[in-house]
Image (cartoon, rainbow, N blue to C red; front, side, top):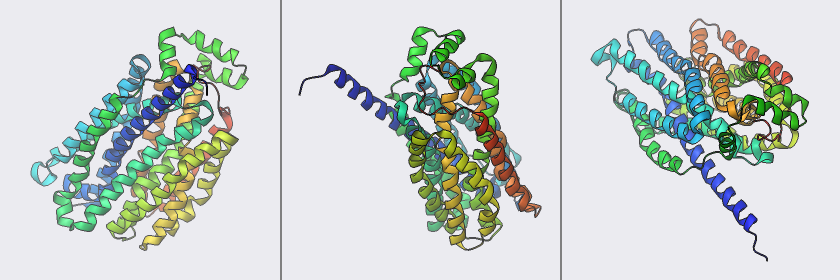
Length: 447
């Protein structure tokens, strides 16, 4: 067989891309683990970090802090997105990793409400704001980076790893939660047990940080940086791509339209996702009387099944297009939200079945978020636009989902929380209808 220098270079590039994909995914996995650990231990954090005299108010306050952390994500997405479009995706992914790890250690060291009173609650709020700021930048850079290093006709499958990291981090958090609550009594969990996940996440972040130091920068971004591409160049390249829908999508005057459509598209996905990952175990424990250990392990099983299906959804979108798969989510979740939530009782199998079905449906859209958002926005503005649109939608519609769910349940109006998810799924369907089909487009043309 003849020696092929071009073939050797191509293989080296593919190896470097896969290594970078692994490093990016490992970091995202740990960041989402640290983020999810708060939601997993919310019932315990509520008892030690807020006034325990009113348990309902304490739990609502805990979930409100969770929501406030999300409100900082748009700012973090814009700030870090701007930095990523100037200094590179890799720089931001390393910076946000360090920020999340430091805040995680600090949360694990916080004094309790019994010790310092309201200062415990305020310090927790401050650290969650820091985490939210960093998390907004992480999400924006990760969604751009993975899509940009992916092979053109496998972008859906590769892009699914971003949501795999989201589910994987949640699975890790619930696994740690189940292990701690199974092996320790409630008094230990309240005193020390809830702190362990945050310390563990910070230790593992050191390994992920080392992996990210060896990542290659996105070639798509480097090409734009070297050529000093202007918005006029972006439009000219899109015109040469000869796709009218893509040309219209990248025109400077329609970028705000694209941002609004992405906000709308993500709204149903994120509300359903946080309802069925961050809140449903709390609902089963607090409202239905399910044992915490059972609820945690059942949630792990359901999320693991959904996680395994994510690359299949991504690959399917590479074959049949993004829009049919997104429609599957919108119609499926709108039709099943009420019956699935109504199925949950004190019996663990009900939570398993309901969560598994719901998360499989959520995964259909979640797997596609990275590729769809990256295919809509040009490279020169991609990360900041994703940071703005994605973070706003997740903050407004996803971050408040657990709080609204608990609020409506405390008012004996559970149907309102279900209706909230259904209506946003309808909004997602409308946005998908208005967005162009972008399967396998050349990101170098839409740059």
